[in-house]
Image (cartoon, rainbow, N blue to C red; front, side, top):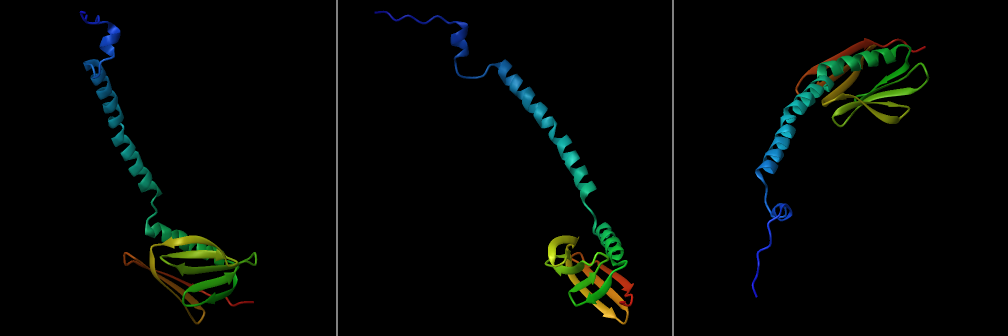
Length: 153
């Protein structure tokens, strides 16, 4: 018996393993297109990070503004070494205290609202009718908030 070679057709050539030059070029072009978008995505991610990242100075200014606004009309202000508490206009007890590495705000003993982050040390004290809040961040910056305590009615 004689064995004959099968006829080479288009189907048998495509069924062989391996890439043609056209397939290799097409996959290279697609890869290069995808890789060309990576720097654009990286740039946009950097811009978003810069815009959303509050500096510690801005964070401090926001805290100061919110804290002083909340104190307007507040009564029964109490100061301890690690917390300041008061009753606001709606008769809710507000407490500001250090919790781990941040300063948090609680309402009626509930909740956990971070107000300042990366706080290494806090110190609250009262001298006569003046209350002083001192904060030290991990980068060594110190912030002080000093205000007069209104006499409780």
